[in-house]
Structure formats: C-alpha cells, structure tokens
Image 1 (tube, helix red, strand yellow):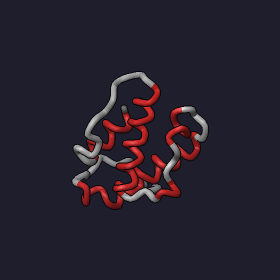
Image 2 (cartoon, rainbow, N blue to C red):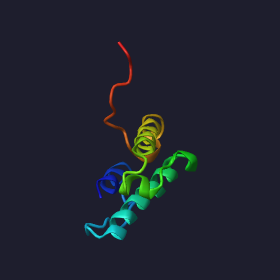
Image 3 (cartoon, rainbow, N blue to C red):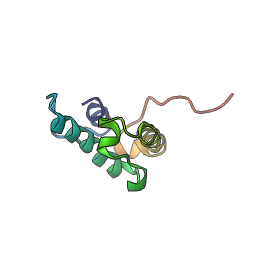
Image 4 (cartoon, one colour):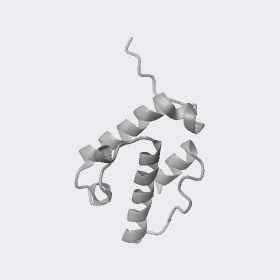
Length: 93
C-alpha cells in the first residue's frame, strides 16, 4: 500500500482503491496498481518488475531498478504530472 500512496501523491487519484487487507491477493493487487501507474508515467514494460518479484522477494534488484527509473522519470517529467518535488540532489560537487 505504500507504493500506491506514493504514486497517489505524485499523480492524485491514479490508484483508486488501496487495499489495507493483509490477504495475499489484495497485497499483490496493490503492487500491480503501482506498476500500471509507473507505466503510464513512462516506465517501459521491459523495466517494470513482476508483482511476485516484490511480493515474494524473488528479484529485488529489478524492483529497485524500476523504482529508481521511476524516480528519474519524475525528475525529468514530474511537472507534466503536477509533481514539482522534492527531489534528491543529483549533482556531484
């Protein structure tokens, strides 16, 4: 549900129903809803992890890469979606 709340901050209303249930299929539906929103914002299908990669901790590297790419897209295109920040400083000094 944290990922769904996160994308709703960036793009309000993008996840209509966030499940608070601890049932596996509800938790996996939350993950799927995050992934759908990530793709609408610009994460390519090839860069999106599978629901079970996160739910069953199968491929956390792919999960981290997807979230990192999502953040990079927000730095570039966030204003297009009404998100102005905050952003982590990326300049090396």
